Image 1 (tube, rainbow, N blue to C red):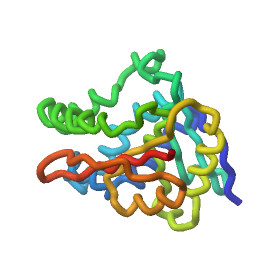
Image 2 (image 1 turned 180 degrees about the vertical axis):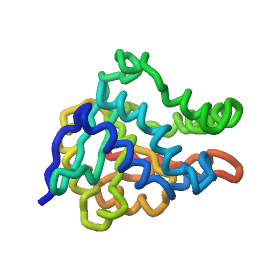
Image 3 (image 1 turned 45 degrees about the vertical axis):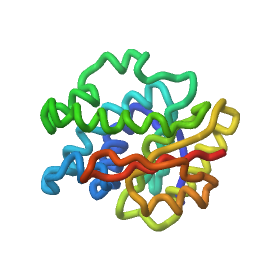
Image 4 (image 1 turned 90 degrees about the vertical axis):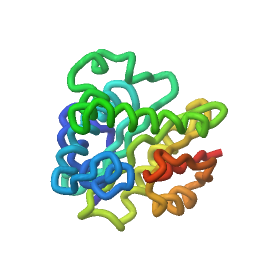
Length: 201
């Protein structure tokens, strides 16, 4: 039986692993980390520090089956800024890990491309779903939808419009079924993926 609960510090390793395996074939990850042989480890290394910061200031829910973490949802919540926590001053830092993985110039290109989509945010940004990941062995069982609904219900009183971005076009119909609409898309690079930004009015 699946159970949803708040994640804690003891879950960090599981959060990293689930996200790395779920995102290994994501267009963004393939663009940023083209070496398939090392991508799992590189994803875990890059995403791990961000997940720790969401645990410190944000909302991270996990879905467990037989006590194993099989799905993760990490939200940035209005009024809670991961950059302003003690965790933000610790190493490694997400941008630093990216520079170590792909080099300074390439990391600057990636981060600038991601920042370029800021204009597609809602007029009053609300909860931002940064990660929704289901372990590949557990996909197709409705776990992602369960976690998404749980988070949306819990954050229903938060100010602003819930929103998210995805570079995987296959995800768009899933989010549309949960009330999100496409606000626009942004090409991260001439030969890179397009980032679709969705709002939930």
